Amino acid sequence: VEKLREILHSVNKVTFNMYVLTAMTKTGSKDSKTETLCNLLELISGIDRDVSLLGDHRHLPTLCETLRGEVEKLGHRDQNLVIPVDYESAGVYQLCQGSEGAIQVMHRFSKITVDIPADKLLKDQTGAPITDIAHLFITKNWSDKDAMVGSTKTIQTLGINSLGTFLHPVALAVGVRRRAED
Image (tube, rainbow, N blue to C red; front, side, top):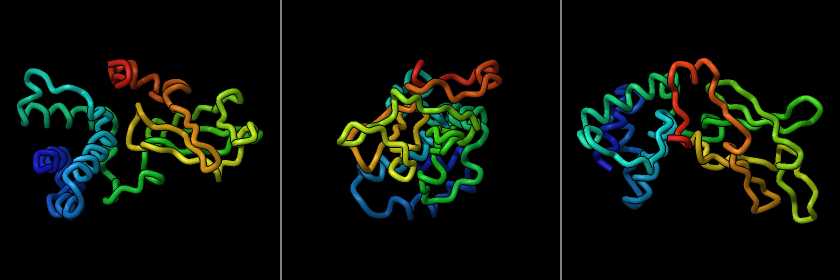
């Protein structure tokens, strides 16, 4: 937990000052504290918590420098972040109602919007597609890779990555990598 606080603080000393990070992780189990800080790190850097740290990245200053570079590539998602983070309003994705009633998923940072195709819409217990956005939500909204659309009317989920890429073509051209493919 202490190392994660140190890493976040090194990425952005204002947003992640040590007083805020300590207050966020004052109570709870070590696992829940670690989970909270890993979610923040994944939101701002796009790096999945399951990525193995190999070679020079096992050295904390090198890791911190790499993370600062990833945060910069993603456009400094950390700059206007309010702590503690409400992932529904500040997470990676947002649900929208499109024209003609289509349900859409918008990537908050790239502003790319994708319609959820009719055949991928979640279905309620009767088998009817759920088209009311009020019954839908996004889980794991700190993750570009693992976020999913869920519903209050079913236990089914839909992986957002299955809808296509949300990276801007310019970002792809300059080398921002999709974590799911690394």
